[in-house]
Length: 340
Image 1 (cartoon, one colour):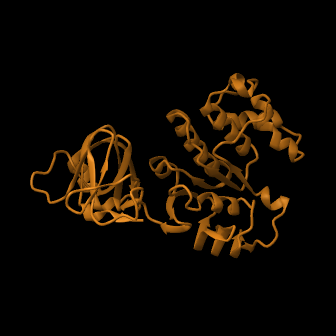
Image 2 (image 1 turned 180 degrees about the horizontal axis):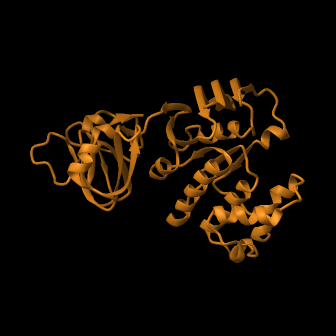
Image 3 (image 1 turned 180 degrees about the vertical axis):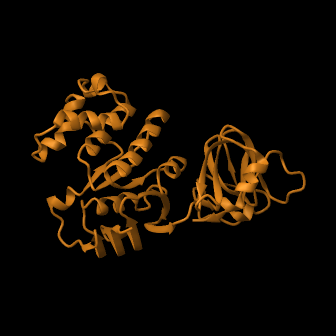
Protein backbone atom coordinates (compact mmCIF):
# COMPACT_ATOMS: atom_id res chain seq x y z
CA UNK A 1 0.00 0.00 0.00
CA UNK A 2 1.31 3.46 -0.91
CA UNK A 3 1.66 6.32 1.54
CA UNK A 4 -0.60 9.36 1.47
CA UNK A 5 1.83 11.30 3.73
CA UNK A 6 5.51 11.02 4.45
CA UNK A 7 7.13 13.30 7.03
CA UNK A 8 10.87 13.57 7.57
CA UNK A 9 12.54 15.76 10.22
CA UNK A 10 9.48 18.01 10.50
CA UNK A 11 9.69 20.76 13.13
CA UNK A 12 7.45 23.67 14.03
CA UNK A 13 7.97 26.52 16.46
CA UNK A 14 6.03 29.54 17.70
CA UNK A 15 7.70 32.61 19.21
CA UNK A 16 11.02 30.78 19.27
CA UNK A 17 9.65 27.75 21.13
CA UNK A 18 9.75 24.39 19.37
CA UNK A 19 6.40 22.64 19.71
CA UNK A 20 6.78 19.80 17.19
CA UNK A 21 9.65 17.48 16.25
CA UNK A 22 8.70 14.52 14.07
CA UNK A 23 11.74 12.65 12.79
CA UNK A 24 9.69 10.25 10.65
CA UNK A 25 6.02 9.46 10.10
CA UNK A 26 4.41 7.58 7.22
CA UNK A 27 0.64 7.37 6.86
CA UNK A 28 -0.70 4.76 4.45
CA UNK A 29 -3.33 5.66 1.88
CA UNK A 30 -6.73 4.39 3.01
CA UNK A 31 -5.67 3.90 6.62
CA UNK A 32 -7.17 5.29 9.83
CA UNK A 33 -4.47 6.70 12.12
CA UNK A 34 -5.27 7.69 15.70
CA UNK A 35 -3.11 10.12 17.68
CA UNK A 36 -3.26 10.40 21.46
CA UNK A 37 -1.37 12.43 24.03
CA UNK A 38 -1.80 15.15 26.66
CA UNK A 39 -2.73 18.75 25.95
CA UNK A 40 0.11 20.79 24.50
CA UNK A 41 2.00 17.79 23.09
CA UNK A 42 1.84 19.00 19.47
CA UNK A 43 -1.15 17.02 18.20
CA UNK A 44 -3.12 19.99 16.85
CA UNK A 45 0.00 21.50 15.29
CA UNK A 46 0.64 18.24 13.45
CA UNK A 47 -2.96 18.18 12.22
CA UNK A 48 -2.69 21.74 10.87
CA UNK A 49 0.42 20.79 8.92
CA UNK A 50 -1.31 17.70 7.52
CA UNK A 51 -4.33 19.84 6.56
CA UNK A 52 -2.02 22.29 4.72
CA UNK A 53 -3.09 25.15 6.98
CA UNK A 54 0.49 25.98 7.94
CA UNK A 55 3.98 25.18 6.75
CA UNK A 56 6.51 23.45 9.02
CA UNK A 57 9.58 25.42 10.00
CA UNK A 58 11.87 22.72 8.64
CA UNK A 59 11.84 19.22 7.22
CA UNK A 60 10.20 17.54 4.27
CA UNK A 61 6.49 16.80 3.81
CA UNK A 62 5.44 14.53 0.95
CA UNK A 63 1.80 14.20 -0.10
CA UNK A 64 1.09 11.32 -2.48
CA UNK A 65 4.87 10.98 -2.93
CA UNK A 66 5.20 14.62 -4.11
CA UNK A 67 7.16 17.13 -1.95
CA UNK A 68 4.91 19.93 -0.67
CA UNK A 69 6.60 23.26 -1.30
CA UNK A 70 3.78 25.71 -1.93
CA UNK A 71 0.42 25.48 -0.19
CA UNK A 72 -2.46 26.48 -2.46
CA UNK A 73 -6.24 26.20 -2.49
CA UNK A 74 -6.20 23.06 -4.63
CA UNK A 75 -3.92 21.31 -2.14
CA UNK A 76 -6.13 22.35 0.76
CA UNK A 77 -9.12 20.79 -0.96
CA UNK A 78 -7.38 17.42 -0.80
CA UNK A 79 -7.65 17.41 3.01
CA UNK A 80 -10.52 18.66 5.13
CA UNK A 81 -10.25 19.36 8.87
CA UNK A 82 -13.02 19.04 11.46
CA UNK A 83 -12.17 20.92 14.63
CA UNK A 84 -13.29 20.01 18.13
CA UNK A 85 -15.60 23.03 18.42
CA UNK A 86 -16.73 23.54 14.85
CA UNK A 87 -19.58 26.06 14.72
CA UNK A 88 -22.44 25.51 12.32
CA UNK A 89 -23.70 28.25 10.06
CA UNK A 90 -26.88 29.91 11.34
CA UNK A 91 -28.88 28.09 8.71
CA UNK A 92 -30.72 24.81 8.24
CA UNK A 93 -28.96 21.46 8.41
CA UNK A 94 -29.31 21.07 4.63
CA UNK A 95 -27.75 24.47 4.00
CA UNK A 96 -24.86 23.66 6.36
CA UNK A 97 -24.06 20.39 4.61
CA UNK A 98 -24.50 21.70 1.06
CA UNK A 99 -22.41 24.83 1.63
CA UNK A 100 -19.05 23.26 0.73
CA UNK A 101 -20.41 21.73 -2.46
CA UNK A 102 -21.78 25.08 -3.64
CA UNK A 103 -18.51 26.81 -2.73
CA UNK A 104 -16.75 24.41 -5.07
CA UNK A 105 -19.14 25.14 -7.89
CA UNK A 106 -20.93 21.79 -7.76
CA UNK A 107 -24.54 22.08 -8.92
CA UNK A 108 -25.67 18.56 -9.81
CA UNK A 109 -27.23 16.07 -7.41
CA UNK A 110 -27.01 18.31 -4.34
CA UNK A 111 -30.03 16.90 -2.54
CA UNK A 112 -28.94 13.30 -3.11
CA UNK A 113 -25.41 14.02 -1.90
CA UNK A 114 -26.56 15.88 1.21
CA UNK A 115 -29.04 13.15 2.14
CA UNK A 116 -26.39 10.46 1.67
CA UNK A 117 -23.96 12.34 3.95
CA UNK A 118 -26.63 12.76 6.65
CA UNK A 119 -27.43 9.06 6.49
CA UNK A 120 -23.72 8.27 6.97
CA UNK A 121 -23.80 10.07 10.33
CA UNK A 122 -27.08 8.47 11.41
CA UNK A 123 -29.40 11.43 10.82
CA UNK A 124 -32.65 10.87 8.93
CA UNK A 125 -32.73 13.47 6.11
CA UNK A 126 -36.53 13.64 6.26
CA UNK A 127 -36.33 14.63 9.93
CA UNK A 128 -33.13 16.66 10.07
CA UNK A 129 -32.50 18.37 6.71
CA UNK A 130 -34.99 21.16 7.42
CA UNK A 131 -34.01 21.72 11.05
CA UNK A 132 -32.22 24.90 12.08
CA UNK A 133 -28.86 24.91 13.84
CA UNK A 134 -30.41 25.83 17.21
CA UNK A 135 -32.72 22.80 17.12
CA UNK A 136 -29.82 20.33 17.43
CA UNK A 137 -28.19 18.70 20.45
CA UNK A 138 -24.41 18.82 20.88
CA UNK A 139 -23.99 15.33 19.45
CA UNK A 140 -26.31 16.10 16.51
CA UNK A 141 -24.42 19.32 15.74
CA UNK A 142 -21.10 17.45 15.63
CA UNK A 143 -22.59 14.85 13.32
CA UNK A 144 -23.91 17.56 10.99
CA UNK A 145 -20.45 19.16 10.97
CA UNK A 146 -18.95 15.78 10.04
CA UNK A 147 -21.57 15.31 7.30
CA UNK A 148 -20.55 18.67 5.84
CA UNK A 149 -17.03 17.23 5.41
CA UNK A 150 -18.09 13.77 4.24
CA UNK A 151 -20.27 15.23 1.49
CA UNK A 152 -17.09 16.58 -0.15
CA UNK A 153 -15.64 13.06 -0.46
CA UNK A 154 -12.20 14.32 0.63
CA UNK A 155 -9.03 12.38 -0.08
CA UNK A 156 -7.99 12.98 3.54
CA UNK A 157 -10.31 13.55 6.50
CA UNK A 158 -8.64 15.04 9.59
CA UNK A 159 -10.55 15.07 12.89
CA UNK A 160 -9.51 16.95 16.04
CA UNK A 161 -11.30 15.51 19.10
CA UNK A 162 -14.45 14.53 17.16
CA UNK A 163 -16.14 12.95 20.21
CA UNK A 164 -15.33 15.57 22.86
CA UNK A 165 -18.37 16.50 24.99
CA UNK A 166 -20.88 14.39 23.03
CA UNK A 167 -23.00 11.43 24.04
CA UNK A 168 -21.85 7.82 23.73
CA UNK A 169 -24.32 7.01 20.95
CA UNK A 170 -23.06 9.90 18.79
CA UNK A 171 -19.48 8.77 19.44
CA UNK A 172 -20.30 5.26 18.18
CA UNK A 173 -22.03 6.66 15.08
CA UNK A 174 -19.07 8.93 14.30
CA UNK A 175 -16.69 5.96 14.57
CA UNK A 176 -18.88 4.00 12.14
CA UNK A 177 -19.04 6.96 9.72
CA UNK A 178 -15.23 7.24 9.76
CA UNK A 179 -14.83 3.59 8.80
CA UNK A 180 -17.52 3.95 6.12
CA UNK A 181 -15.70 6.96 4.63
CA UNK A 182 -12.57 4.84 4.30
CA UNK A 183 -14.40 1.79 2.96
CA UNK A 184 -16.87 3.55 0.64
CA UNK A 185 -14.73 6.21 -1.03
CA UNK A 186 -11.18 5.47 0.03
CA UNK A 187 -10.62 8.38 2.40
CA UNK A 188 -7.47 8.37 4.52
CA UNK A 189 -8.34 9.34 8.10
CA UNK A 190 -6.21 11.03 10.77
CA UNK A 191 -7.91 11.58 14.12
CA UNK A 192 -6.88 13.01 17.47
CA UNK A 193 -8.74 11.97 20.60
CA UNK A 194 -8.23 11.88 24.36
CA UNK A 195 -10.64 8.92 24.42
CA UNK A 196 -8.10 6.12 24.07
CA UNK A 197 -10.72 3.35 24.10
CA UNK A 198 -12.67 5.06 21.30
CA UNK A 199 -9.46 5.64 19.31
CA UNK A 200 -8.48 1.97 19.49
CA UNK A 201 -11.94 0.99 18.30
CA UNK A 202 -12.00 3.45 15.37
CA UNK A 203 -8.38 3.43 14.16
CA UNK A 204 -6.16 0.86 12.46
CA UNK A 205 -3.13 2.18 14.34
CA UNK A 206 -2.72 4.53 17.30
CA UNK A 207 0.43 6.52 18.04
CA UNK A 208 1.23 8.47 21.21
CA UNK A 209 2.75 11.95 21.34
CA UNK A 210 4.54 13.68 24.21
CA UNK A 211 6.35 17.04 24.23
CA UNK A 212 6.02 17.46 20.48
CA UNK A 213 7.47 14.05 19.62
CA UNK A 214 6.03 10.70 18.63
CA UNK A 215 6.65 8.63 21.72
CA UNK A 216 5.30 5.28 20.67
CA UNK A 217 3.74 3.52 17.70
CA UNK A 218 2.47 0.74 19.92
CA UNK A 219 -0.64 0.66 22.06
CA UNK A 220 0.15 1.96 25.55
CA UNK A 221 -1.98 2.73 28.56
CA UNK A 222 -1.67 6.32 29.70
CA UNK A 223 -2.32 6.95 33.39
CA UNK A 224 -2.91 10.62 34.06
CA UNK A 225 -2.02 12.24 37.41
CA UNK A 226 -2.41 13.72 39.96
CA UNK A 227 0.00 11.45 41.86
CA UNK A 228 0.55 11.56 45.63
CA UNK A 229 3.63 10.40 47.52
CA UNK A 230 3.34 7.05 49.31
CA UNK A 231 5.09 5.98 52.49
CA UNK A 232 7.64 3.67 50.87
CA UNK A 233 9.05 5.66 47.97
CA UNK A 234 6.13 4.93 45.68
CA UNK A 235 3.54 7.32 44.26
CA UNK A 236 -0.20 6.75 44.32
CA UNK A 237 -3.05 7.59 41.96
CA UNK A 238 -6.41 7.49 43.75
CA UNK A 239 -9.38 6.51 41.58
CA UNK A 240 -12.94 7.75 42.06
CA UNK A 241 -14.12 4.46 43.58
CA UNK A 242 -11.35 4.39 46.21
CA UNK A 243 -9.04 1.97 44.40
CA UNK A 244 -5.40 2.98 44.12
CA UNK A 245 -2.76 2.63 41.41
CA UNK A 246 0.76 2.33 42.84
CA UNK A 247 3.81 3.27 40.76
CA UNK A 248 7.52 3.04 41.51
CA UNK A 249 10.06 5.74 40.74
CA UNK A 250 9.77 9.49 40.74
CA UNK A 251 7.52 11.30 38.24
CA UNK A 252 8.59 14.72 37.01
CA UNK A 253 5.63 16.29 38.80
CA UNK A 254 2.29 15.30 40.28
CA UNK A 255 0.59 15.49 36.88
CA UNK A 256 3.14 13.38 35.00
CA UNK A 257 1.92 10.69 32.61
CA UNK A 258 2.48 7.07 33.56
CA UNK A 259 2.86 4.61 30.66
CA UNK A 260 1.89 0.97 31.06
CA UNK A 261 2.31 -1.71 28.38
CA UNK A 262 -0.87 -3.80 27.88
CA UNK A 263 1.31 -6.93 27.99
CA UNK A 264 2.29 -6.12 31.59
CA UNK A 265 -1.32 -6.40 32.80
CA UNK A 266 -2.55 -9.86 33.84
CA UNK A 267 -6.29 -10.51 33.96
CA UNK A 268 -7.85 -12.71 36.63
CA UNK A 269 -11.36 -13.56 37.80
CA UNK A 270 -10.35 -13.40 41.49
CA UNK A 271 -7.88 -11.44 43.62
CA UNK A 272 -4.52 -13.30 43.59
CA UNK A 273 -3.61 -14.53 47.03
CA UNK A 274 0.18 -14.71 46.74
CA UNK A 275 1.06 -12.18 44.06
CA UNK A 276 3.97 -9.76 44.55
CA UNK A 277 2.26 -7.23 42.28
CA UNK A 278 1.30 -4.02 44.05
CA UNK A 279 -1.70 -3.35 41.82
CA UNK A 280 -4.89 -5.41 41.88
CA UNK A 281 -7.80 -3.44 40.46
CA UNK A 282 -11.39 -4.49 39.85
CA UNK A 283 -13.05 -3.32 36.62
CA UNK A 284 -15.55 -4.15 33.90
CA UNK A 285 -14.67 -5.38 30.41
CA UNK A 286 -16.00 -2.94 27.82
CA UNK A 287 -14.34 -4.05 24.59
CA UNK A 288 -12.29 -6.88 23.06
CA UNK A 289 -10.34 -6.46 19.81
CA UNK A 290 -8.23 -8.90 17.82
CA UNK A 291 -4.58 -7.87 17.39
CA UNK A 292 -1.65 -9.15 15.36
CA UNK A 293 -3.83 -11.01 12.86
CA UNK A 294 -5.81 -12.64 15.64
CA UNK A 295 -2.89 -14.07 17.60
CA UNK A 296 -3.67 -11.94 20.64
CA UNK A 297 -6.63 -10.01 22.04
CA UNK A 298 -6.76 -6.51 23.48
CA UNK A 299 -9.19 -6.41 26.40
CA UNK A 300 -10.31 -2.93 27.46
CA UNK A 301 -11.41 -2.58 31.08
CA UNK A 302 -13.20 0.38 32.62
CA UNK A 303 -12.27 1.29 36.23
CA UNK A 304 -14.39 4.31 37.15
CA UNK A 305 -12.50 7.32 35.74
CA UNK A 306 -9.69 5.21 34.21
CA UNK A 307 -9.59 2.87 31.19
CA UNK A 308 -6.83 0.24 30.92
CA UNK A 309 -6.17 -2.27 28.14
CA UNK A 310 -4.59 -5.70 28.65
CA UNK A 311 -3.05 -7.89 25.95
CA UNK A 312 -3.81 -11.59 26.40
CA UNK A 313 -3.58 -14.75 24.30
CA UNK A 314 -6.53 -16.63 22.82
CA UNK A 315 -5.82 -19.43 25.28
CA UNK A 316 -6.07 -17.08 28.26
CA UNK A 317 -9.30 -15.61 26.91
CA UNK A 318 -10.79 -19.08 26.52
CA UNK A 319 -9.70 -20.08 30.03
CA UNK A 320 -11.12 -16.92 31.61
CA UNK A 321 -14.35 -17.05 29.62
CA UNK A 322 -14.75 -13.28 29.77
CA UNK A 323 -17.02 -11.22 27.53
CA UNK A 324 -17.92 -7.50 27.46
CA UNK A 325 -19.64 -6.81 30.76
CA UNK A 326 -17.55 -9.32 32.74
CA UNK A 327 -15.96 -8.21 36.01
CA UNK A 328 -12.21 -8.89 36.09
CA UNK A 329 -9.17 -8.17 38.26
CA UNK A 330 -6.22 -6.39 36.63
CA UNK A 331 -2.84 -7.31 38.14
CA UNK A 332 0.41 -5.47 37.41
CA UNK A 333 3.61 -4.50 39.19
CA UNK A 334 4.34 -0.96 40.35
CA UNK A 335 7.64 -0.88 38.43
CA UNK A 336 5.82 -1.73 35.18
CA UNK A 337 4.69 1.90 35.02
CA UNK A 338 7.17 4.10 33.16
CA UNK A 339 7.23 7.89 33.17
CA UNK A 340 6.68 9.96 30.05
